Figure 1 (cartoon, rainbow, N blue to C red):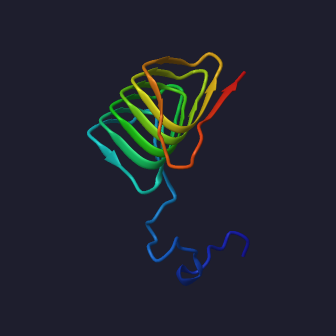
Figure 2 (figure 1 turned 90 degrees about the horizontal axis):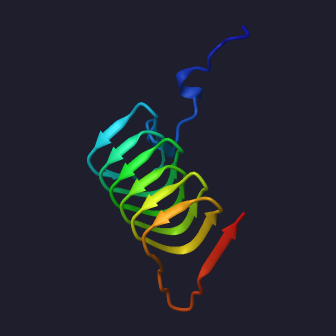
Amino acid sequence: MFNKKPAPDQRQHTGGNPMAATFSILGIDVSIKGDLTATADLHIDGTVEGDITCAALVQGEKSTITGAIKAQSARLSGTVHGSIEAGELVILKSARIHGDVTYDALTIEQGAQVDGKFAHRVHAGGEAALTLVS
């Protein structure tokens, strides 16, 4: 009566594929060696040794990524050893970046550490967006 589950034909599915997800999470206890490519957004709390390509990336504070990152948007708060290429990039105060950074829009919290070069991607008719946050 109260804890009744809906019948299988009444359950909601994501699109035509019941296994489709809008994001993927790699927990703190997950360690991956190899490149990651995702059409979904990624949230990484574990360790990755390899290149990452995705739509959006969120990195946890205790996460370590060793490899290149390419994303439309990225919010980094852990350690990265490798280059970063992102449209919208947010580097939080707990982040430790060791590599070159290419971006369209950039926000850096006070206290973040970056050891590398910054380069704005040049788009026709566009102007750089750089924001420093205290």
